[in-house]
Image (cartoon, rainbow, N blue to C red; front, side, top):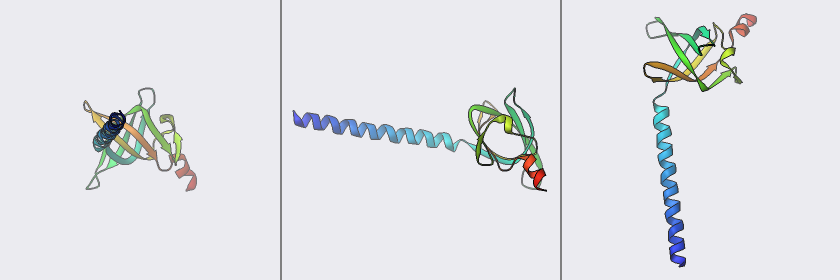
Length: 122
């Protein structure tokens, strides 16, 4: 009887480890699908949860990219938690996003220094 109990516990432990490793692989695959853009905010539409970023690509050419903000996403402004409403035109921003059905869905926004703070420091 004791052997069966120990065998059952070992089997449960092995299955638990296997499920954790599969969950880790799934998360790694999802994160692998994400992209990153660094640029300057051009416009923000908080009602539609969209914003546009001007990115300078190789060769010095500027390209505007429009994102839809994921409501489960995270906004950080100067290292502190924020909201999409805090995003202003002229802000330097790093956006982590995924593409779904041709749309760029932003999950993380990191504003380096708000535009108002830049103007005040000059």
